[in-house]
Length: 438
Ligand code: GDP
Ligand code: IMO
Ligand code: MG
Image (cartoon, rainbow, N blue to C red; front, side, top):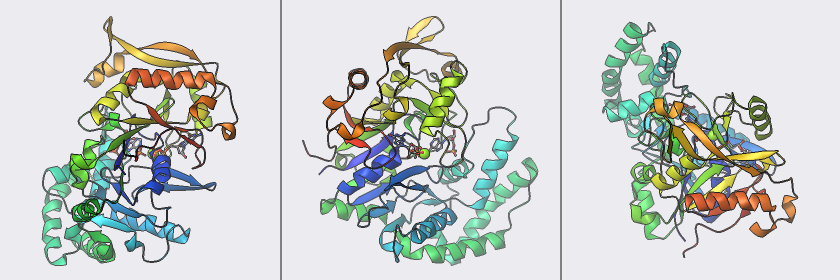
């Protein structure tokens, strides 16, 4: 069996959680490798909804091991809240540390990261990013500037205080002098970190070594990306991005496995596009077709799973999708939320842009250009509602939906391996199996 990486092929919220939950039946290890609790991954099993922010979406399968690898920024308080909610819903039984392990090398999100994220957003004169205010950016900044506190540090009370003091030196100047906030108290922070460290101890592991052993024993792995390609720090619509590498390469750096271990990369895409937060969004229809945007938002329930914000709606952008296929090395696409578009008058697909009077087929690099490009559309008839229970293969789908799928496949050069037509596990047509060896 191949190891599979799941990535968001758009701006996040493509339905990664649903697909990871579904594919978890084929894997033994499910690994989050980047991002943090800015993610909101929704699973609907037997009609019951579970939203996960930090724990991998394989957790509802009782026999799977869920790993949080070193590339994740880890908020211990959120982690325990999630564990408790899974315990109380009966999704996991006692001894959750047997099924959920956290990397000793993951960087920790501390209260001052959340505070900094919040004051920066609140006090930015212009150019707000519209972050999730979960401290993600400030925690990654500390990692890169080598002031971060890692999970292993929480377990060693004797050195922790000095490390926190070092981090606070700069943070407290920023908070008090630049942002007019209170300073963070070292002693109180230290005491809560020591306590969290003790609670965390049974969950902590050397994830890279664990994965190496799993590889030797040919155990199948599923890597669960968070956010989406266009939010990638290097390849997204900078600066309106998140602070990690959301593309498939992030699975390697974030977990410590080598490229050879990856057999397939599945990009998750919606039949349309959404974006939550600020930043350029070339095919957005909020102003051009506001009633339709509202209709899609309402049918698709397009409200953030983490912050509850309205997601902005747009037509499918094939230029951006092809870009995602390229930067991730996507081998197959999972098309979700096709049901949301059932019975629309027509569909539009963006197949090129106009920039400064020229037709372009690539995403411009600057946010300013992205904001002023005009999408050029091809118009397609939409498919009628149909009885999904009677669909056993692609050939049973309405002709219009088959044509939409063909267009996406031709434009991007990769096959659609899964079609999702509802939030539930069973509302899915698996077209081919990315875990299967060729
Ligand atoms: P993620 O962040 O990529 O995991 O996606 P989210 O969970 O944030 O958002 C996707 C939303 O769409 C969730 O509420 C899912 O339950 C829902 N969903 C997933 N697939 C489908 C689908 O095919 N049709 C419909 N109607 N909803 C879906
Ligand atoms: P999932 O995994 C959609 C967006 C935020 C903001 C930008 C930066 O559920 O698809 P951050 O808090 O990361 O510094 O915010 O990124 N963002 C997401 N948008 N889905 C997500 O995750 C997101 N995680 C972050 O809205 O625009
Ligand atoms: Mg989400």
